[in-house]
Image (cartoon, rainbow, N blue to C red; front, top):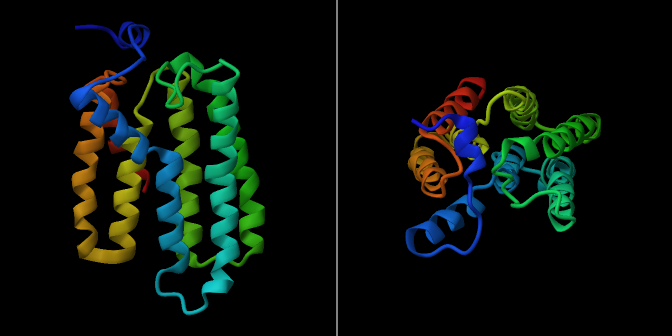
Length: 201
């Protein structure tokens, strides 16, 4: 069996076809910087009468947890410090993860100034706990962020919306399959990404 580091070093990027192309689309659709937006939107606005009162909370959380981190990752990619926007190689993940952690934690005091709902504070806290945990793991071993984010997304939606959000559970194996199909992770990395984030959430 190929060891994790050997697997990581054999990652190939380039043009994809057929099911591999579909897997890449799935990976982009359910990337962490995309999933935080519907999570924060639901946490901010569900069962809230005053849309405008909650809007600053959503704007601040989206800015610090999605837009600023993705902008830095995109700039690193354009400057050729990253060979893929999804950062498949573990050694390339450390600087982007440091930036994301700083941005998310820097956003907390600004979020609290907007008087967010209890649900919004809870979801942002899940994010703040999960992110440094998977970052520390990444120092030694590559864990699947995609698997973690889709699991977090599903649990948050089940908590907020109840039974009708059960369909989101089917997205977890779909996203896991996409990461395996693209050979970005081993099955163990995908499993622990989802399991760890699920426990935290």
